[in-house]
Image 1 (cartoon, one colour):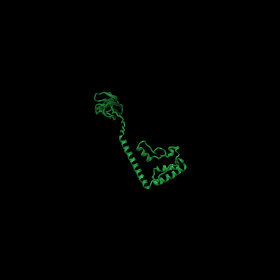
Image 2 (cartoon, rainbow, N blue to C red):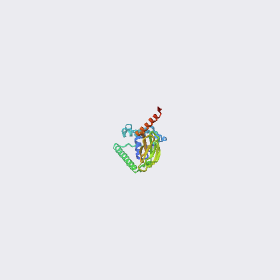
Image 3 (cartoon, rainbow, N blue to C red):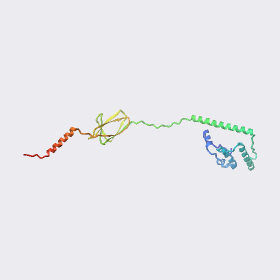
Image 4 (cartoon, rainbow, N blue to C red):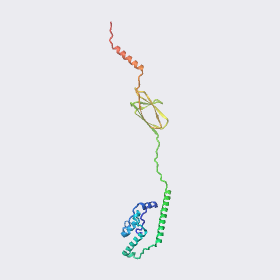
Length: 235
C-alpha cells in the first residue's frame, strides 16, 4: 500500500512464490524515494516481511500496537492525516479475521500450485535435435610387415596391390579380401581382410629355410673348386 506495488512479482505464480521464499524484500524507500516514508514505519514493514519468524512481531497485538503508535506520530506530524482513524478490532473479530486471512492465503497458494501444474502440463515438450550420424560406407585397411617392403598380392586374381606398409580404402561390399605378402628370402603369408570393419595389422615374416638337397649341392661345388686349385704331381 505504501509503494503501490507488490513486494515480489516473478511473472508466474510459481516464480512469485519462490521469490517470497528466497529474495530479500526491498524497503519502500528503495522502491520509491519520493514517498518520504518515515523510517519507523519502514522498519515495521520490513519486520513483518522478515524471512525468519524470530525476527517478526511475536503477535498480531504487538504489530497493532506498533502501528497505532506510528499512526499517532503521523497525526501529530502531518495535517493531511488528521482525519484518519485506526480502528481496533475486538479480540473475537481479530481472531476470525486472522483465520480468514490464513485460509485465503492457503487458497491462493493452492490455486497457484494448480495453475503451475496445468501450465507445465500444457507446455509442448522440448525436442532436442539429435545429430545425424551417417553410417560409414568404406573400410580402411593398414597392413605392415616385419620386415617391411613385402609385396601385396590379391590371391583371387594374382594382381599386385602394393608394398608394405600398405594403405587401402574399399567400399563396404562383399565378404572379405584375401591377400598374400611376398618378400625375397621369406616365406609368403596370406591374410584375410574383412570388408565390414577397419583393419590395422602388422605381420611378421619368417625367413625361408633352404632344402638339404640344395645345401649338399652347394657343398660339392665348393669341394670341387677347392680340388681344382691343388697342383697335380706328374711323373
